[in-house]
Image 1: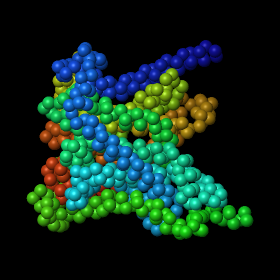
Image 2 (image 1 turned 30 degrees about the vertical axis):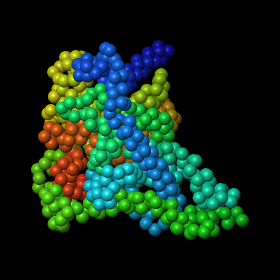
Image 3 (image 1 turned 120 degrees about the vertical axis):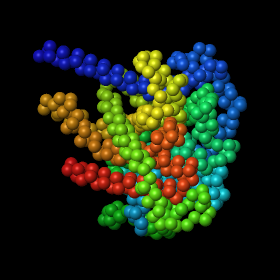
Length: 284
Length: 310
């Protein structure tokens, strides 16, 4: 009997080891493209095209980064992206948190069709609204402006965020606001002081989603922003990449810098992501 | 006194004594979001419907008028629609299959006791965290015939002939799929992990006592309890993959070689903004939307019916 257990233990140990290597393999596959970009960004300017797979190239230098910041409009694009992304995030959180609360706590005329409508908007092909919106913006002279693109980005994220906030508010017991009311608080006070703090994970997801809709978006921006001085980072980055003569070093350095805020935010907020997403989807 | 509160507790519209009636307060909360969504989602949607019945294009930009169902007839009569439709189905099916398989498998492994689990889990989320534009352009550069990492790896480590990834239709399509799989599995993995963590350990122990093998435990305990969490995720995954313009457009640089690498949504983009066939693009968008709507209704109905069995 003891021998049997010992064999089983070593069997499971080998099994565990195999699984672990599988995991490490995937981690490597995940990391490699990132490492690849990093090593390209370090290549010295006279050897941008190379067939070496070395991670840190010989004579690595930060030349590409220097050129990126001093000789291209990169900083300007960064500035544009930051403004747009921050405004979209703030607007998105404000609108979604209030609208979601209304859907969660009140029954009103048109509520059911509105909820279904929110879900249906998720199925719109991305280009379906782009064309009419482009024409509308043309007529309102909002093409090529911050306002135009901010409006589009906010509305892209809004339906999902409202749905998400509503689902999360549904898991917060109404009795808490009840208690606040008994203690003399107003409806708005109960909302801001009791419910909002508890809804923090969902607010975080809303903020993240809104931010990512604006920071890393290419297709819509390519149509709406024509002036190079208004370009956001993805548009600027695409400039470095063309079939004929890609400026590899600049492109790689730019990619990393664009990714860093997005990745940092994402990883920082990732622990709320799991709880927020599964809660919303299980409760439906 | 207690009864008074109890009846109030059961009614959601408790805020009667405030100045605004419950309905009015709700509307006030909702109006800003509703206005934005009306202006930027609902109105454009109906505008698109009108456009799909019109002849708007570069030639008829300001003087367009409604021409009935001609654009829809055009959509269904061009042969390219059917080949792109099939490609879209293949694209969606292959991607979601790999996303779910890899995601769930990794989640199961990560659910065990492992050294450095938290670090590995964080690293595995990276493809999701990196902006899609960057992912697409990076993989595009990796698929470059002469200098891309993929061919260099194939040539130097596997000693096989390099593949002309971006130059040939099948290879370009595969390149897009590989990129999207890399991009998409962390989402499924995260959802699956969350779902796995809510399965009580006692169920596995009970299965062990009954002498179940790992395989049996997987099918009788894990899968049924993971289903409620995965079904919404898979639905979303299917819709998002079906609608993903970024990866196809940016990895293949607009459908290269010669418009062979398209799925429905990227072809709409091309029709609208490269070919200026606005009416046609609007009609095609409506067709895509109808497809997804029908699919969602069908899929959700089917899975709800089987969920009722639990």
